[in-house]
Amino acid sequence: MSATILLLEDDQQLSDTVKQFLMYQGYTVYCAYDGFNAEDIFYEKHIDLMLLDVKVPLQNGYRFLEKLRKNGVKTPAIFITSLNAVEDVTKGFDVGCDDYIRKPFALKELLVRVESILKRRYDNSYEEHIDLGEGLFFNTKENILIKDNERVAMKTKEVKLLALFLENPNELLSYDKIFERLWEYNEEPSAGSLRAYVKTIRTFLGKDNIETIKNVGYRFVKK
Image 1: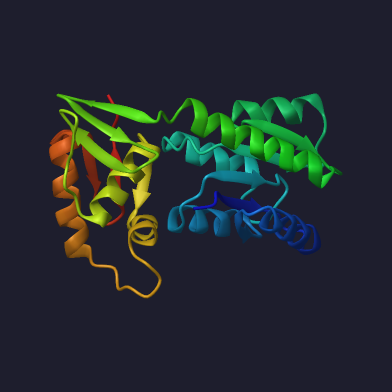
Image 2 (image 1 turned 120 degrees about the vertical axis):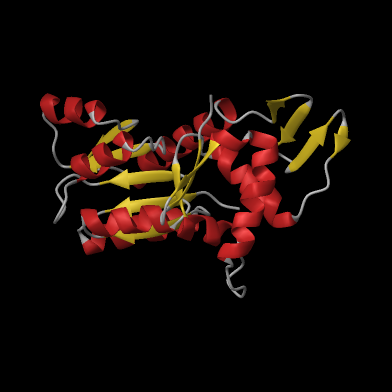
């Protein structure tokens, strides 16, 4: 599965150019043209990285990212903006960005920054074998759960849900985002089945470690 990128940029031409370039590199790109639209997309889709302009309609990029960080979202973000004063850069990092690129920029530079952050995220923060305690390990490359050196039998969607929680510790996962990850485009998502999958995953991650956010989704609280 290719990494997914949220691009918040209200300049249609620049947005199209960046999207086409990144898609050619193998990424999936979702475009937003204002801050509220970006918020909707973020909570509906699985996003691995955000590229955010600052001066966009309705809700600027600073405010958008600041709200996400206050909600515990750790998805990496790069600001791409014409604002180039030291104070602007400082504010970007203060609200939680991982990198800052001044306009105009070369697409090749953007690609290097994107690849660097994604590599750092998955190579360092997401181990190949995650220790879940009591003899349980999750192999992130093969997507299998192992207990006492033996594979645990799980349904495909249960494995996908377990991987999703482990990839996004302490982050709110909306129903839409979970449905998108677990169900194929030609399948009908089932809220009842999701509740059953969550019940199973709680036996591995701990009942109290998966919070139910009423009418919104779930959060895996890593302690």
